[in-house]
Length: 157
Image (cartoon, rainbow, N blue to C red; front, side):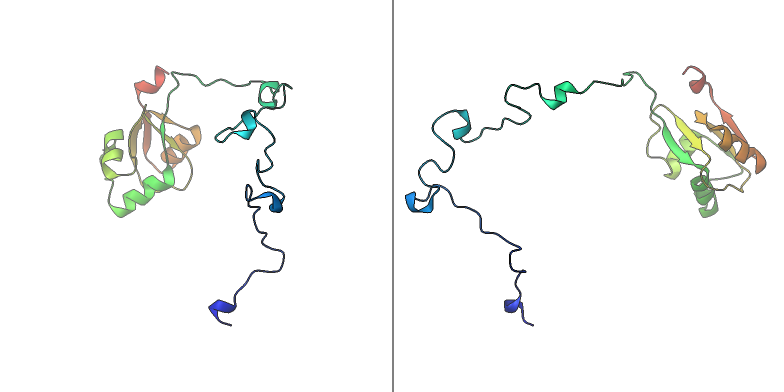
């Protein structure tokens, strides 16, 4: 088989209708757009319009609410902290603060604080000082012999 012998399956592709190419084509003159009116012009999109019927997007109920002053936390998992400690990017002996996590490259930016979740295993004895933590994360760190302190910024939440 050569490149010039490649072709699609019969019926897989269909020639597009070339409109406005004379009366013999069956789609000449107005090109199937009818006579005058908004829809016969170019650059018109009446999306979502249902001929005067109430459009679907207006018939559906509006639900939910996004709190404008909500707290946005950077999330890290215990498994990642362990990985960074093993790689020597985090010092397990010193207290690991939010600034240390940013400096190590584990977190890009603090946002409203850093929250620790319990995904992954931790075996290093670490002293973490963060804005938030899940109960499971606190238990896992204490089980490994370390401590996880939640700072005051989360108490104001």
